[in-house]
Image 1 (cartoon, one colour):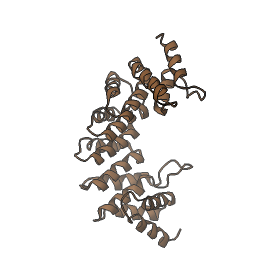
Image 2 (cartoon, one colour):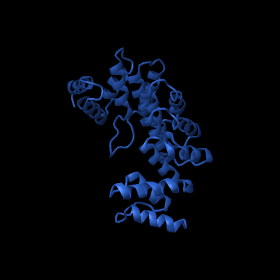
Image 3 (cartoon, rainbow, N blue to C red):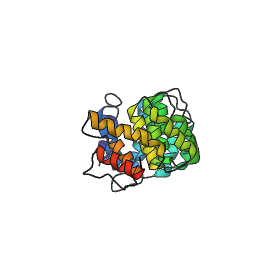
Length: 262
């Protein structure tokens, strides 16, 4: 790809609103190209006076050169340095969130204390970015404590991702983790409740059973289908490697009753 074409893609990332599909298509294309030239431009944008350019620079670096066939970043140490330095003085929500998300994708454990520092940020968007990024380091002891705190966040999406990171992405187990997940079984948000069920079932905590039976039975009454997360919680609690394709909610409920003599 020529330098002019790369420049045109960078320009495209600035068009329209932040979430416009065309802009993100350009970000994805630049990531796939993943060359030194793309790195240099994205790293320079991380120091731009334009907040959107800083955000786009961090987003490009977050998965530079990473594809299905190539699972690691190109220039990982240099990408980490550019993004972490960007955070030193960043105050704008959009580039700040982009940089935090990028640190999660870059998989450098040195980022953990940087990310944790934003868990109580006034911006919901920033706290959400922290909950997402910490999922990449979900087994780290400091991360676990930060995620436990984020499971109590006032925002539904932040709690949902924190519970998912803690319970599903992470394999760590402790009374504190289980209690944090158990407390979310009564959450006002359905997604949070279901992620908590999965996290408890993964750890074979029997306290999940009443909520799991209720979800299976409610699905049978109101809807012929059962949510994917409910199914995941059920088969994990049954110690199955995967879901049974020919089973419905009633089959899982019966198997759980038999397994736990209920």
